[in-house]
Length: 374
Image (cartoon, rainbow, N blue to C red; front, side, top):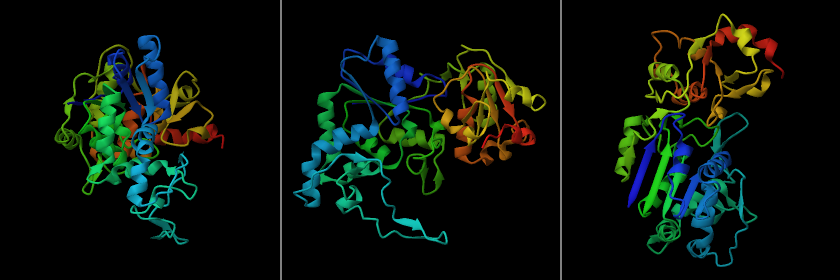
């Protein structure tokens, strides 16, 4: 069995590598977490092969779980819950009831609408639709005798596909991640590609395994060790250089954030602090501004740090937060910054293929009001 994790740096070309490395004559399944990522994969496949190869399937992870791990095994689901008349009616994006909810005073109390995992209503709405957020949990929970759905599905997947590839694996958490690990124990050929330091960046899906445990954050070395224990080989060289960011930008990110990133040298660009020239940069529409949040509130072209993940711009200006105003200091310590904030900053600082402008929060606050539109 071939099980591999390719650890990449920002701008190394994760999607490019996957799409150009596949054998188009083989049956490939490429999975990703978001629809935007799926669109990028489809575009890259067309660039690489002229079209999406006939034997290659591209789909979101949740669509994969539903069509390959749930729908074919509904007879087993009915039997498991002893519901012979159960008939599902697709999947919904409704947020499932959580065990505890805040009351009027803000205290967390028991939610009477919550149903335990032993009941089908934990996974299905009253209308018979699966909660999208719980289909991975359901796939892991249901067994037919001693054999799990996952093991049975793996055999089927090995018949249908020669290779399974998962892009941006750092986007997967908790039950989604556990499904991948459980499947990988039985799949003939599976490759995961991602950037450890881009985890906890999205607006959701940031809690739990494999990047957090009961002790707190799982550091890079421990994450790699855990992946190896799962039976994967870890490749840290194939996508070790950024094809997007310049040597100066990569060196600065590595020095300041403590994240090992080097450049392939394909682009030139400098790191420029602009506190004495902030207005001209903010007024320059050729420079994309990256703010921590609420980008839509400003008159200049802007993106939130986290939402910029996956984007490439010609030049970027990162507007820092209060806690990062000392980034230019020799005493700046990235270990004192919250992991999710540090990772979002890493994403923001690695979007530009050219110059990277940095603006302190204190500088921006002095002129901020003239740019607010809401």
